[in-house]
Image (cartoon, rainbow, N blue to C red; front, side):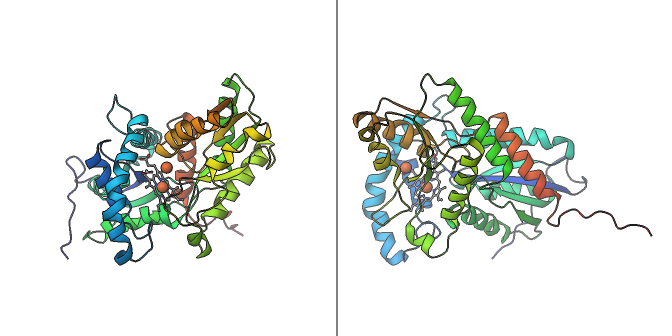
Length: 351
Ligand SMILES: C=CC1=C(C)c2cc3[nH]c(cc4nc(cc5[nH]c(cc1n2)c(C)c5CCC(=O)O)C(CCC(=O)O)=C4C)c(C)c3C=C
Ligand SMILES: [Fe+2]
Ligand SMILES: [Fe+2]
């Protein structure tokens, strides 16, 4: 293997060592056409953390039916939610905004913030090189997933460590733990949901909390994701004064024929009008930023199916995105992690 030495960028040659922050998220295609979506899905669905099946079995399926048919369907969905003015996906816009706004908050501490995507561009490796070139010898890796899963948090960190493997001079690294029921996350969610509910011209009879799903077998093998989702929802119900009936937990985005975590969001929502529940709100506290899963799968597909089933109103409550609540939350989490792992001790008395 050849090792890379990253030169300090102009102006940073003699600067003292710094600490930097690398925000990462899942990633997104570069465009909504067949080619860019196919390239993105090929990278995504070749990740062994995402699909654990043997490549001997999976690759023919991936390069056969999946990458033949899925890019068109997903491309159409991306097209519906695309930020056409900036020619990029919402996930990319919000992740960049979060990094730029957090950087302003940390400017006085001389802490730069870079951002990278696990799949697609800009890559996590690019972001890491950027920080090293700016003189960072300590880097906090911050995957922006509230709930841990090997399929998200771990694979984002794996990708950073793959890039670190190639560096001759490695910075010291910390990783941000998931923050499923961190009081700052629950408070930010509570505030943003309450504010949005107040703007609706109807009172929802139910607030469905829909999380991205996961194959059930991954949880049976020990992935803590399902427990983490439960921790988020229990804390949020408690903070907002709702019970399980008023704020049920469901899982969306099933992919492939295997069993995923249940109950599934789509059939759950479609069953509501028959029970007299015709006006609902949907929240997605498994996502920090709106993306194809929230904006299209819930905001378009589930909303249409709910109306077809006899529902009257479905309001999708936005994620924290680039709101002041989001940046306050990121600043709190990052500052806590940069402070240290041992709780502060009172200074030993001099006597
Ligand atoms: C087996 C497949 C998948 C697993 C496991 C999985 C886990 C998982 N994903 C997220 C968050 C996101 N997923 C997003 C898109 C997306 N997810 C899958 C498949 C799996 N996800 C696919 C194929 C796609 C692409 C879209 C599509 O073709 O349907 C996104 C949005 C990206 C965007 O650009 O908007 C996010 C975010 C979590 C949290 C998770 C497990 C906990
Ligand atoms: Fe996903
Ligand atoms: Fe989806």
